[in-house]
Image (cartoon, rainbow, N blue to C red; front, side, top):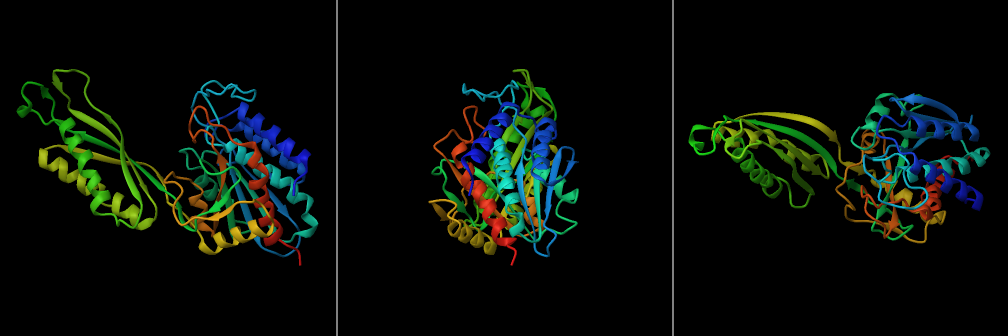
Length: 384
C-alpha cells in the first residue's frame, strides 16, 4: 500500500514533529509544516481554523459520499527523559501522547489517497485539529464548521495504544473511551484556632467527608454494569499548623462510559456536596470547568472498519473488543456526537505509557494506521 520511500518520509516527518512540540492552540509551526505538505500533495487547504486547525479537502468532482479523517497536533507540558536523536528541542514540552505519530499517519495516508484520486468519487476532508489535550479542540473545529459544506456523512480517527501488541488494529463498538467532567469545589467554612475547633467550621474536615461520600455515587448510584470513576485529584486548604483555614478547594474528576453513567455521577454531585456542607454549617461553590463526552463508536461503522481492515490486509492482528480499552477521554467524541463513525486503535507495543516522560510513538505502526485510512477511502469513495 505504501512504498519504502513514503514510509521513510513519514517517519522523518514524525521525528521532526516530535522535536518541535507545541502546546494546545499554539501549534503554529506544526500547522505550517502540515499545511505545506498537504498543498504539495494537491489538497485544497484552509488554515487558521479554531486558531491553529487545518482542513484539507479532496473534491473528486464526481458524485459520492463525504467522509472525514482526523488527526491531532498538540503536545504536553512534560520534560522529555528520552535521549534518542529526535528528542524534544523545546525544553519542558513533549509529544508524550503520540499526536506527532497521528499527524504523520494521516499525512502518509493523504499521499497514498491522492495517488488514487482517479479511482475515487465524492469528497474527502482531512481534519488536523489543535488542543486535544484539555482544550476541546475537536469541539472548536466542529463549531467552526469542518463537518459542514459539504456535510460529512462519516468520520474516522485513531489512537495508538501502549500495552497492546505492536501493529494490532482493534475496535470497540459502542462505548470505547470515557467521558471526562472536571469540577472545582470551593468549601467556605469559618476560620479559627486549631485548639478550639468548636468555634470554627473546618473546611478540611468537611472536604474530607465529601471525598468519602463521593465514592458512594460510584458504588450505589451508577449501575454495576456500566463504567465510571470519581477521583479527587487536588485538595488545597490552609498553610499554618495552628490555624483552621476559612476555605478549601477540591478538583473532582469524573469519568463515565455513556450518558446514563455520566448522569448518575455528575447529576448528584451538587446534591451530595450540599448535603455534606449543610450538615456541618459550611457553604460551597461548584464550577464545571471542563467536559468531554464519552466516546461511543457507531456499531455498524465499527464492523465496517474491521471488515475493511481484513479485506485490505491492513494488519495481521485484527480484533473486536468487548470491553473498553481505557477510561481515558478523547475529544473525538465531539465529532461522533454530530456524525456517525468509528475511532479505532493500533497497538504501540511494549512502550512506556501515554503522558510518560519516556514514551515514544512506535514508527513501525505508521503503515498499519495509515493503511486503515487508505482502505476506508478506497472502499467508501470507490468510483463505480
